[in-house]
Length: 306
Length: 135
Image 1 (cartoon, rainbow over the protein chains, first blue to last red):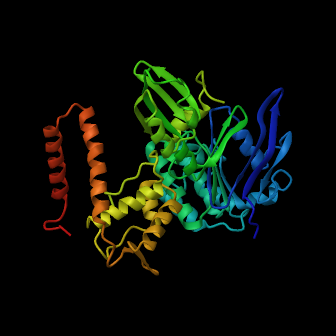
Image 2: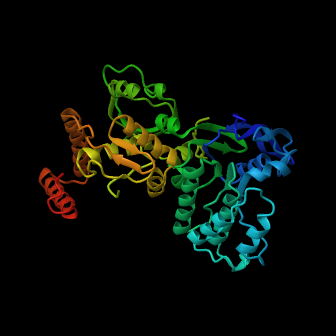
Image 3: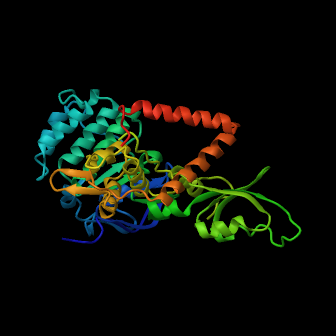
């Protein structure tokens, strides 16, 4: 078997007129990982996903699916990929059962029983036309279709968009079950950072078409902290404004009570030393959620780091 | 296992939170020797976390002798799980107390009010356990 990455972007650049939707984006998704591609609306996520699935030819670079050129070999490679697109789309007059019947002829690995069971778990009637289902139900049908072919790779493009709490929970339950049963590799773009935080193993952030972060979730969480402290003048203090240097501050705000900073290079030993710095009082370091990290890295606020 | 909670936003990795949580449940007797623990799949769904994360915690607990796998049956608390060391126990209690004291002080509560809330919380816990369920 091919031990290389399941999916890779090789220096992908896409232009719409004079605007670059993706600029020189390179990353890879390892087998068995859950790779979360994050970014604000218009950051280039969907364009990138289309290139990776061979639905769009990049101006430069290429997408690799299972080690092969995604654009040139798309017809053959898509057999092993399950996709849940951003807008759940299927012929509105066909029922989920009819759509499944159509799909089973395309996929060699189709499992009709699994499809029926999933619809049942999602509470979706198999004989109601697709066009009459709710947004959450449509998403559920597409997820059930994507999983029924037992894909090696599952691609979810903003799967929780417009879903209520119950439908979102059902989707994550199904995703976790699939990971447990088959160890499927997953690429997911999402705005539901709290929902994906416990599930993703690696995180990438796209900003204005560029990949500004690509890292294991665990190391990312380990190195980001919010540090708050009082900054005092003392008789013995000689240096000011350099106390945060060891931590690589990405964002610093001076407030009435002291300094409020986000740092990207935290470690306990440096923080112990920091607390003993002359003039630094009541220093406190708190963990940051994925959402807070995202905001400090990809947010638009003035004074943001590189 | 309602007593096991994880917070993905915490600085401590989720597998470590699960490992520590289960260790405590076993050490306190809330999970008795020989008792079954949920499957990796069920616990992962319950907590909405990646099953690989749960599997990692289970594997470490098996290596430490806290859990054991019975082939084809599932994962159980070991018949003689290692007891929590005295030092470890007092460290955990002290850490928890420091956190609670900070929280109480921030909310403007004095030591008496905080202690009374603690007693109530204890009473609630015991009320939920089966009578005589000390082990």
